[in-house]
Image (cartoon, rainbow, N blue to C red; front, side, top):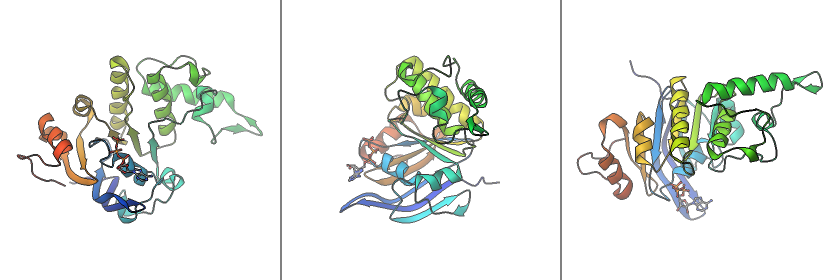
Length: 252
Ligand SMILES: Nc1ncnc2c1ncn2[C@@H]1O[C@H](COP(=O)(O)OP(=O)(O)OP(=O)(O)O)[C@@H](O)[C@H]1O
């Protein structure tokens, strides 16, 4: 029995002015799996993620969510479907604490007052469900956290709301070895919970450590969508650097 992809984009085109960045791109992601999105600098990964997340809706193409055609014209549309994107800049407020960041704009209230106890409890549960080591107090300001802890908070914020898809744009780009390991464990755990996780990464070791599938872009075109188990590091590097891998062919 074939599983319906939660994200299924086909024939996606996107231009900025006269510059065409995405050409006939196809991309699928499945529940319970990590799909790595790879490609060289400028290949179009971030642009595709912005199409998925409604920041830059595609100019043309088909966007299906859980089998049904949808129009995702804004981040609000994406959030309503349960699609959350953690951008590279994380968009956390440095001067606010963890709870305030997790619930910013979506605060819990009891009557007119904020329900601080409920939010703290939800924050603790969300973080302990994600991380191997705890972040410490949920009342710590973001400015006091390490890069890995910030990434954990940003991911927790994305998955606090019954999300079905979470897209992580290079979550380990600025992290050391131990923190990268921790973030990869979180990525795996999210997929094991049934989410479809899309992971943009330039690091082949990370991609092979954690992904079930790999989608490769080259100069704004899809050059492969394959199962990670079916390809080698060398083949994926060839796809990224030249758009083809001699012994793999073009698969999508
Ligand atoms: N708003 C924009 N206006 C014009 N061109 C853009 C815009 N956003 C992206 N581009 C161009 O689109 C191309 C793809 O960029 P994109 O950021 O999607 O690539 P990427 O694969 O994410 O690269 P990187 O790994 O370096 O982040 C680049 O040539 C970039 O200059």
